[in-house]
Length: 199
Image (cartoon, rainbow, N blue to C red; front, side):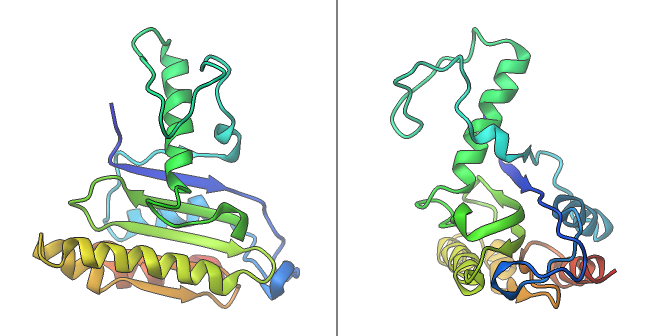
């Protein structure tokens, strides 16, 4: 079973006005809440999105010692419901920072909330990241690269999805977070995020 959308969240709250490394202030907001509220308020639903926290990046202890997420297969039929959920969260977490899939680098972000499509027929990606020290441009470039990848994938394939990718934007909020918006109602979602971070 695969999930077409997933969401990754790491929340290290920085008090408003405090100086984050690299000059980023940070809004002090829970970025996952900001992201999900911005999408919901714009009427952009993500019912199959999965929230993953950093702890889910640890390999579950029920996996074989030689399990390699890139090359190994694993039969999930014998897993309990809780184990299956843990396995799916582990896989989604790894996919979020797969250099060949998104190009996002976790070490460049000290706080983040990310939702991207796992389906090539859907141009979708919304992210908020507070960059690590000196990594603001790197994060913006990673987000821009993901958008370009989606433009190329959709240009001669699905015109409505290509239009969504063309309207995508990457911006830096006054509080220092780098924002990527590639979805329906992208202008509304972006403004919702900016308003929530500034509140």
